[in-house]
Image 1 (cartoon, rainbow, N blue to C red):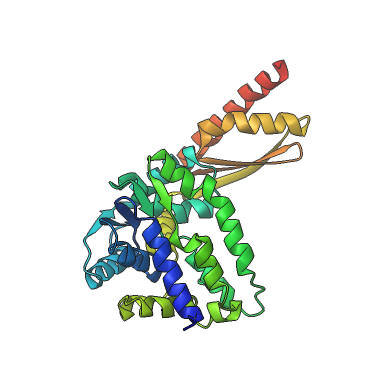
Image 2 (image 1 turned 30 degrees about the horizontal axis):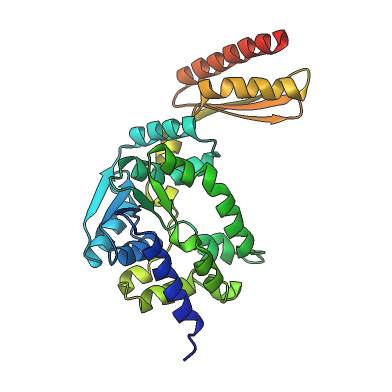
Length: 310
């Protein structure tokens, strides 16, 4: 008998998870449908560690605790104070080149990977792009291209999720981004995938795979909101100053920006446009803002002198 679309999707997801379970697995766990389903399935094939990250009383920690209980799995919760969350953000930014929003939503993944004990780090990345989970997909007149969303994410993995797992000597597993899962998901139209609540075929598949209905029907909350990382960063880094510095040509501007980048990661963001370095300096108070700006300008001055000597 020929399998229908939903049966093929269920089979593809479970097979993708199984293929990633050659060794014990740590799951970056938020308690939502994406991470809960891969954790629930992985538990059939190997030893699984669940790690949830968040600031005190954050949504993700509460959701993770309840979800872990429903699927009868042990959970490690990493409760991190807002100031520590920001410090981790600075540490991550020293290693990765991320936009401010990427820093916010990648922080829980970074901390989970850093604290993992198993060789494989499994996550739910890709489910929102593949199955239309984000709220922006349901805005009036939204022009959605989920195929492009998935391709863009896959292209970003090497400099983000993959780089993080490599730094901590872990292997990355993203079951939702396997070719078979993508192919099975694309048997459903974009409209069917997005639906009124997002990820409709994934929810149906999770239900068929026996994930508890309370988890299946949970609403989406982005990592930066659920973990408290965005609030922590915005509450502590309250001051910023933006300015542009013009140089003789684009080559000099690029070389100076590159030379100063390691010294200013976390506090200063720079973008080169033509022969101008556009910089944003951030700090928790006005005194620190002045010091950070002065330090940055001193770095620029040294780098400019060096570039002119070359």
